[in-house]
Amino acid sequence: MVLIKKKTKAEELGDLGEYIIKQLAEEYGFDVILSKDPYDDEKDMFINGKTCEVKTQQFFHTQNESPAVEKSQFNKVKNADYLIFIETPEAGTNCNELKVWQAPPKEERKFGPEIDIKNSDGTIKRTMIVCDRKQLNLMGIIDEPSIVKRAKELCSSGWKGNNNGK
Image 1: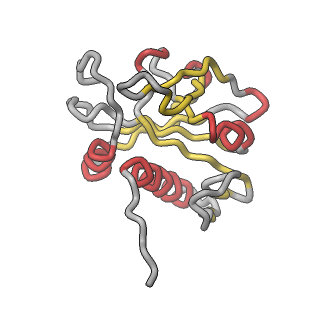
Image 2: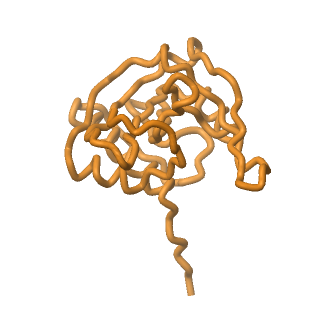
Image 3: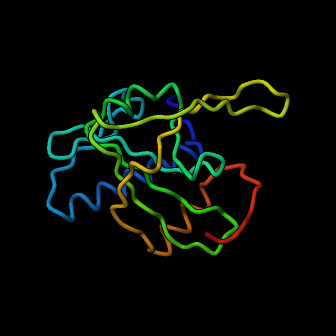
């Protein structure tokens, strides 16, 4: 008997982001090959033969609205030919769009401080490395209601700060 592990919300959100980028790239005539291994330590997909890593997340409010990556995935993110972030809105806001950002070529990427995300007892849950938002290029906005709704449902951010509907 084969047991199938249920995906976490974070894994489903990642899959959604990869699907979005795959669809957009194919619409523009690019050749896309998704990685068959969900734990591939090099890329999520190939776009025209180059490695591409996609990170779908709510950006860090305390770090100038910048994205961050888990330290365990830093080499993958640092070395991918294409690095794309999909910024999800806060679940309780009126914002109904996802923003698609592209990082500069890997030789030019700047990463900032490490941030420890802690459990309620103060132990470190995971360490994140910030990617400076100022270097990102806004590629597009996704406002398809069903996709935005699903992204909001899957967002696992524990942000309890202002809720200004951005």
